[in-house]
Image (spheres, rainbow, N blue to C red):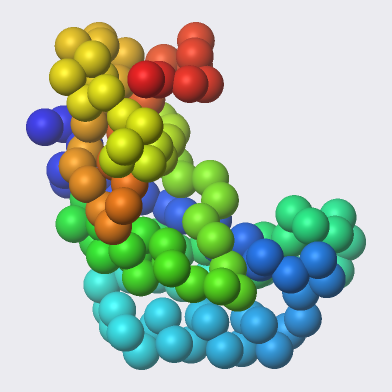
Length: 135
């Protein structure tokens, strides 16, 4: 699979309407402690972001296994959720709930690559920008 050795950047968004620095200071250091040097964590500036869409930081993984680990760690979190996921080659990664995804149909698509399952989701790398909704 072509996406295995790529780096992936995950946007970490707060679920709070007006996130505070306390959220950043609790979530990001905990991730740093859990994943250590396997990831690169960057803190975002909270000022000037629209309420309800606040990015508190980004996490960059070295490979797809790191992507799965970080996604599985964040998926059940009540304070934050995963926003956009982008591969080092510029392709996007979309997520679908396992019960919603038709993995056989996804495997046949030329513009998408099923990376695998993480938690209760399937992660799909989309090569083309023609569609936002691979099924």
